[in-house]
Length: 136
Image 1 (cartoon, rainbow, N blue to C red):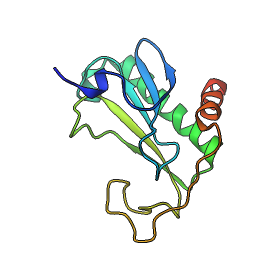
Image 2: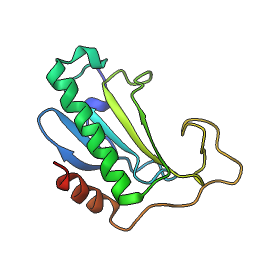
Image 3: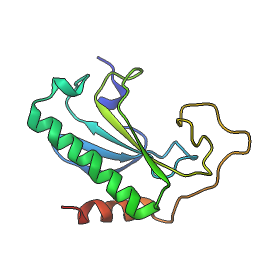
C-alpha cells in the first residue's frame, strides 16, 4: 500500500512515540500552527482502534489544541478527521483567526478575496513543543 501518512510528511515533528506523531504542517502558509496528529498504525477509522488507543489519540488531539491556544491565542480551533483522500487515521488541528484567508468557512473552501493576515510566530515549532511538554 502506498500511503503518504505511513511515510515521512513535510513538516516539523513536534512529538512522536510508538503510537502517534504530531506534525506542524509547513506547507500551509495561510495557517500557521496547522498540525496533524497521525496514528502510526495504518487504520482507517477511530472504531478500528481499541478503546484505550482511541482515548490516547484523542488526548493528544486535545493536547495539541491546548498548546495552539496557549501559543497563538486563535479565535477558534477547527478539529477534523476526514481521511477521504488519504484513508489513514489522522486529525487536523487548525488554529483559526477572524482575519484568515477563509474564516468563517472551512480552510478547504475558496479563499476570501482579500487574503489573510499572518499569525505565525518566531520559533513556532519550539514554542509548541514547550507547550505540549508542559501539559499533563
